[in-house]
Length: 488
Image 1 (tube, helix red, strand yellow):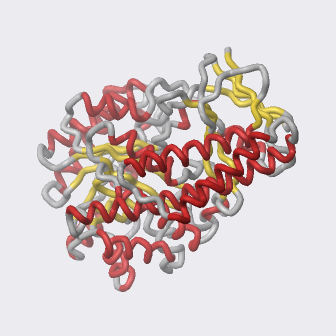
Image 2 (image 1 turned 120 degrees about the vertical axis):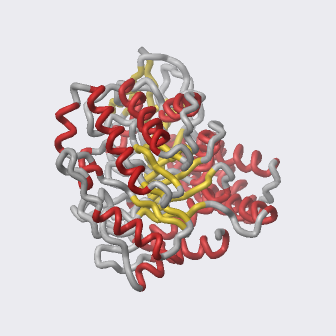
């Protein structure tokens, strides 16, 4: 059994709850199963192996909010590491390495960014040199190096997005990327709301609730889906993306499906039958099928990991049998694989996806779902981590569809989001940081904003573009500006 030990910063600046979400990754970026033992004096990461690894932990960055930061690869040793010093080292290391890599690829580093790089590196050097002579000063300087490094990372991401998009525009005036709005489970907006939606998006995503469509086994109610598809056609959006058709979350499944949890063959047959009913009804009106989401996670149904993989295969096959031509995408949630630390799961999300791609099922693309700011959900990542994630998944050599949402206020049940997502204005600011990075990536063929409004009671967070009173948030204008500048 291996252990990695860290001395946390003094005081109550970091909530003890944060440590429950810490994890360690190897060279491939895949989290190890681990257990965190916290006291005010020591954070201990317990693992079954004693290999070196990088610690990842949500950390409150001054003027930014809570971000997942990481150390460099650390060996296990008897002497504990100073947590903030190692997070500062990891942050500055990522910043310097990525800036060099992008500069070698042609990125021009602006003078103000070069100054930020030098300054943050200098502050870290002072922190490291004071580690033994003045531990308190080391902690203070480490926190400052983290704050400055994160600011420089934001600036570097901004430059990458701007220059990479400019390069793509040298090849084509308008990008073919789909910018899609998920209209959820309620009737679409009309009038001014519909106009603003169409200004922001060139396509529409229509999720399917099996529970709503087939509340009683064998009895189908297509009223809402028919209305939504007709609305998209009436407003002449460029593309209709239907799905996810199968979503294993409890709120999306009919109650009667749980009768078949202990009979996997029958469960698989029922899922296939529903998928084909949907496809046969809307075939020829849809540009893209999203067959399923979240099957890499142990959600809703009590089935094994092997059964989830088999079910994923079956969802693709069922649609391909009913519609041999229309592209099919399957979506993975938590693409960083944070859940691997606590659950008895063998396949990382990337390995799960790789198995499906290699099976040659006729899969046209892979979707990634990244929701930021949801209470208890994924902690935010900085632009460099988002870029690295897309590059890693791009190695599958298959088009990527990224579904994202950014919380911009408390949820309807009153749960508060992370600090940097507390207001609609901060939601718009985060979108300006993240979306250009995604648009700049040639592997990304589509971006789906995962929630249009905050009216629907089943929504887990308030990441809509319209609030619960149907008033547009600033992020809607951000999306409209991106579309006008870059997309058809």
